[in-house]
Length: 424
Image (cartoon, rainbow, N blue to C red; front, side, top):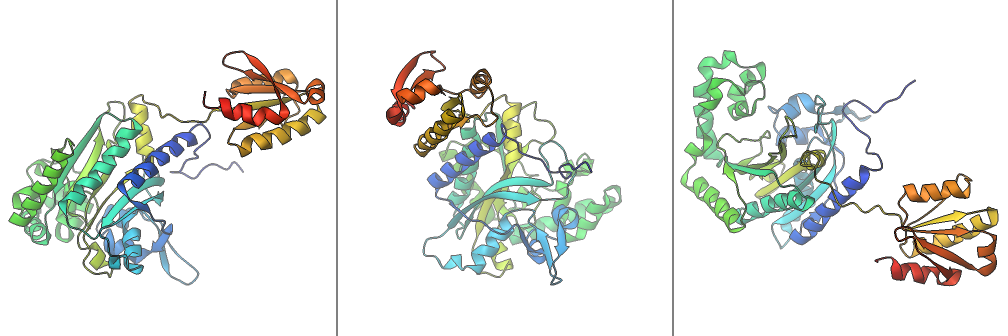
């Protein structure tokens, strides 16, 4: 049987995995600077958690979740997004009782959605996200956005566009909901079946429909920002002022609603404006979710967060023609001429590696010429050749492959020599 990777998934091979590692390194360094501590939650959760938090009218819950029954007849779902699980953990472990709020958490790991595969969209994808739970200060909204922008800019992206909006509080959402129903109801028969089902349950989701996005009624739909009450408008203005202070450029888009039901107040997306990226331009999305902690069983704990696809970040870098500074250089290649030399090569390799000097040697019993070619292909900085004379003299010629120079160094001093010259 010819086995292949499951549809909608991918193998990250050597040569690509180094790019992932570099992105993850950038993420972890910035999370440390911003003080977002890592949390690791299970890959599957109770299905009801996502139904209650993400929303039973969303595409994720209705069409995209990988749900199964375990042997105890319990319904479990592979996590389609990260926020619900983090909030569940926040409640379960009573993090709301910690003296310092908000609790600032980060995560990175695989998510699962049954979607049609295309560039930047997989059924198993890796998502990085942060959640700041326990504060309704607009300054934390700006900080979360700033962290997301920092990740992309540190990775090297230039063609970025930040779009923000406010969904208002519960009263604003209710007033806007009534206006949307009144707007769409006379012509709802012209829309897709999903939109027809959403009309009464959650008409805001109609604005996020990909099928009917060109319908003229979309362009004339009531804007949520027109219904903001005094408190919601003031909050949104404060967020914008903090973004201004941070020097972060943004565009206000009244039609930005995001795809998850738990959002309110601030919502945002970071997009790529690179011309070669293709149809999928949204790199990151997030927003505020006051009320979600209470919905999952905790006390009042306002929160805000974002999630970004690592796959899309890498695609955006490729579209801009930018490369990550990945360090996979080989320091030393040891060429062994015979079995006795091979014993010494293994011994030396161990001592080199113990000092952080990356080392490779031949395991295919190749001739010296073939081993030298291998060292060249691997880009080794240094090469030593071990044979009978080297073993007798207890010394080896260390060849600098870049300069073409070489220097005889006793075996007992090789580690010191290489350590001294490694950074040069």
